[in-house]
Length: 261
Image (cartoon, rainbow, N blue to C red; front, side, top):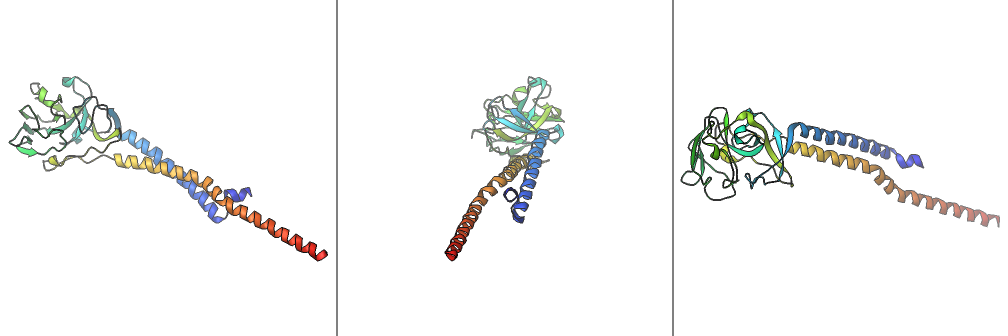
């Protein structure tokens, strides 16, 4: 009886083997996803509203660890620079070394090397900056603006500094890929920068990392549930068999008694 409960027929033994395999593969995917995520990403809590509505104050974001040389226009980055208070900040890169960043053109848009850039991520439908400016970005540096242009303390307020508002590429430690909490969406690469030299960066592997963790969890739960579910489904059949046996035995006993009488 015990042997049938655990293995049953050939199909039962196959099911047990497959459930064990599912749990094993699930553990690899689940733990591997967490390790992969820990290597690739660092969590960061956004301290201000300067990047709203893309990310809000208090949001927990996943920022991919990158080298400053990998940064492209349009990236939302985490950086730290002594001239900006030497504290981690989140801003959007709008200009790289050699660019001339200005605002605004006749349509109120930001321009890069004289070309207007559409910025659908801005909260306001007004001009891209209430403060007009024109800045040449030194080689090896980045010009950064917040998406909340009305309140963001960004490169515009540092135009009189030695770097003309720009920060070294080496000051960037990570690039924001997604909002983790409260559950949000991927931080897209804006198409407005795609046509400029160098294009935009490619998203990191955050979707694959999350997919690995979720798939691993599903396999672990599914594999672990197989045994209890299989035993529960097998009970009605076993009970019916037992009842049928008892009835058959009773019938034979009655027939024998009638014959002797």
